[in-house]
Image (cartoon, rainbow, N blue to C red):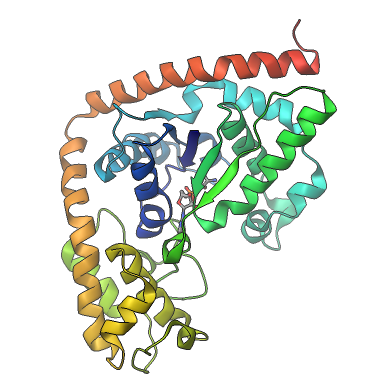
Length: 331
Ligand code: TYM
């Protein structure tokens, strides 16, 4: 079992990233060989501020370590430190089909109506993601629900490449999506859109950098409906905001939705929200404190990323060499 997953280093890590991906990565560290990386090449597919991107690398590395990623157990590195990701992407662009990429919902959402004006990188983004995964012959890719389609595409690319070039090189990976409510944490302002780093409203997401007061305020102001909480999960249908808040509580405490409703059925959000805020603060506050400590030692973060890059380069090199050889670029 080999685990590979990445996160874009744009914006602060939020509760959706934490519950949908990072805390699951942390748990997998003891069971499998893990590689986790900062997907800075992916960040180039939308408008960027170079100075911000530069500083966000260490910040995201620190956030991952503060959340529990242990560089002694996992290989933690920066995508652009390993040129093989970009090289393999180019090779795989010969395998991926326009029609496959056209069907990607993230492309459709992000490009919106302005496809002609979207960057080419935004369109081929999932091929880079496939290269990230296939380069290390990952078997499991722990991600939130929103990335499932990209992992399925990675499988298709792997299988087509192996067939076209008659090799047994790439391992079709399994999307490894958490059960329960953590796989898709929604915005606090709109229960039908996902919590996201790029939502213009900071009130829509809880970030690792938020103070306890700010977390309390965001939850107090989170959109809800006037009904009390029901006594069963089915009755949350058609109440996306209520479902989301109950789901967050369940994911943070490790309880099931039914257990949470068993405790709060009949109560209004005036009672539920303070309990939710307490549980989220209990999760985030210690991570935030560790993050503040880690920020004080940028040299150590650089050392960790350099050691991770060395290891990742070694692991990826044989696969790239074989891919080049398969397509005729090398003997
Ligand atoms: P990114 O940076 O958007 O998100 C990082 C991880 O967090 C998960 N996630 C969520 N989970 C639950 N609820 C949410 N609201 C939520 N928002 C984000 C994402 O599913 C992801 O697991 N393309 C990827 C990065 C990437 C990658 C890869 C991942 C690049 N190469 C190779 C896996 C393997 C992305 O933009 O994730």
